[in-house]
Length: 336
Image 1 (cartoon, one colour):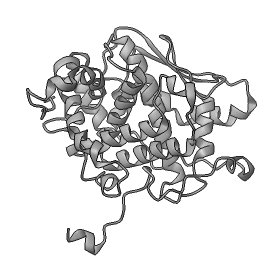
Image 2: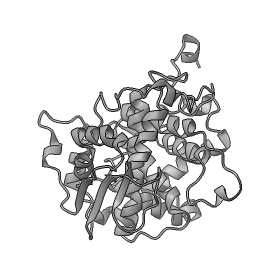
Image 3: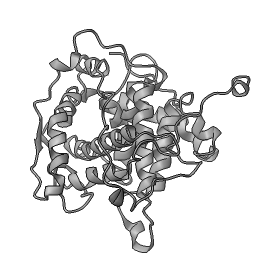
Image 4: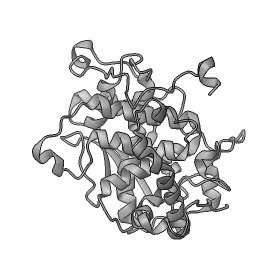
């Protein structure tokens, strides 16, 4: 596999190389060949699904039965869809020195920080994703299926990122949760524009729909606010694929003051991977991962909860929503 070619110059690299060395882990599973990954769609999968030959013996998985009967349908849907089995295949190129257990389970809260053990994706969080998703399509054009699928992919990649940082002993300057967000967002961009739009707009919709008001000691949390996470994900998207995600700048969703640095941030991820993390990747398996279609057309197509429950948190309606679908190009737009 050819290395990704960095556009970072000798003068610009030192400015953020410490942070980039952490965030560059995103490319471990997703680097492309020749040109930056987001400048090209992944190769078409052959008739025989390459995923059937993928596995990572260092990754164990489990679906823990819930004690709360309200989560039983969610538990059954997860086992039937088998996302953790696919996640283990997706992680096949990564050479992990230690075993990693990824599980779904009941946490007693929507989120629990990674604590150097199993990676747990909480049923409470997944239930919240389904409840906050629009019944059909949001005012900003995000479908229920994309809202659910995108938010699920985000939390799964984010949680695994925390564990991989520890497993590979990657030093982190800054907050680990921010680094994990960068990794998750970057990986979402590696499988073509359709997957990127589905997952990132779904992720952004969920952050907005959460509508969490931060006050006082809330700001001491190890995670950034939902609004900050909005912009960080959007910067990865715009920095890697300004053509597809240019609408977030055109509509002033991502301020130009931040957007101007996004290409550099993305380039530094490439620089960091090429210099520090390539030894952990099997290039043959990486090519197979990139040739596989991981997101199914029907992912996230689950029925909405009862109106009495879903109405407690209204769907976002802001015309400036970061989860807005890209605008249709008009004849006037095409002339500019």
